[in-house]
Image (cartoon, rainbow, N blue to C red; front, side):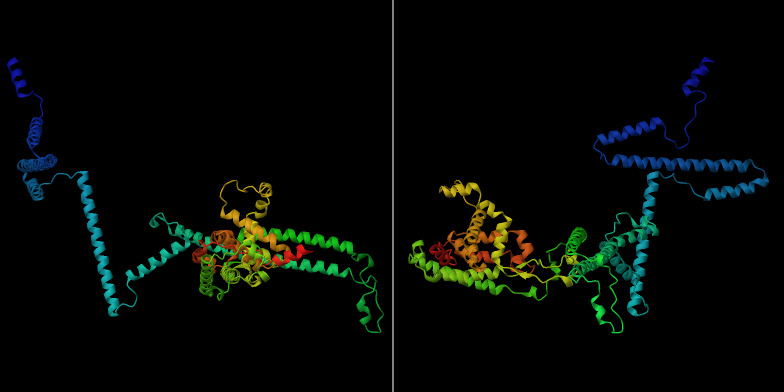
Length: 551
């Protein structure tokens, strides 16, 4: 018994299950892994090891499938041999069908199934694309031959796609999501919402305009009523109507139906008028705020779209040519005078009769200043202030009631700059007054900026010329002479040109200042910057000051 047990243990035990036919034993697999590792270590390519391992797995699967198929054939043959005569025919037919069915291959893995599915889908897409291309070619050929009445489907879809893209841009629709995921109802709602964003504001503005017109008509009726009440207070205070005498002679004069106690005396009329005007001002203020908040317009502003078309075609090239000629003449005269050492001195100014007859002074005042004035006045206007208070809140909405812009002198532009920069407070500051009284440097050794010098010059011209009611041309000539004396003509004019608020509110869109920024004119004026001048500034008021001093 011991010998039998030892023999059974040596043979592997009594209940040991053998491996199937074609299966690889664990020892064999370990040996193969060791062989592969040895081959890789011996110099084999590392990329070839996984490939060889996959091929080995496929071969093992095929061998196992073949062994299983062969075992099933053997089993069916044994069934046929043991069956009776009646069952043998049926079993033989089944065996024949099973034998000719072929050996089933190994079951594919998940990755292989996915790859096969992707390959099949790619083939389907290529086939669909090919069919579409052939159909488009066929439709195009039939349309060109005249056998197809309507446009090819590809051309129609391309035009529809272009229209849809333009509509999406115009309507500002948000189609970041995929259109295929949205239902027709959702798409319709999005289109309606986008159209409403464009249409609704226009409808609201139309309604607001109608409401404002209605309120304006009511205000006009109320003003007419106030005027009638005030006018009726000056009539005779008798109880009879004046028109009673115009009745037929057969009818006696009837007393007025209005009792004497209802007459309006002047004090009550004044109070009623003040109350009405106060109410009207409050109403106009509300309308003004409402119009500015809704339409972005205000009184005193002229919409840029209301300029006449013939004004936009004004040419400023002759004005620039005129300025260039005047600058060249002044430059020649100044160079000639400097070469002859004939610069006007303050003592010579008293000898100049009738406001000065010096050729250089005349060229500066009557040619250069006039040319500069004409070029700066190109497109210059003053905002209209004569608009009715009733129509002012909606002036930008009623082009028919908008008054034409009024012209403006360039000197007024300098005065507006002086007021905007609070020039009077700057010039008349206590520190400057004390410094001038004690002949001390006003700036304390710091260089004077062009802005400070311009404000001081404008203040000087206003102080000397306004008391004598001199014209704007005279004041501008004085400022130009002062600028040439201080060699700051270009810098002073450039300050006005760089003042965006003044340019935007006082120059038309087609003007030379708004289009070019006065650059070419400044380049022309810069030719005089290196020349020294000593021109008289008070020629327009010198005689008047002398007369005043005489008395």
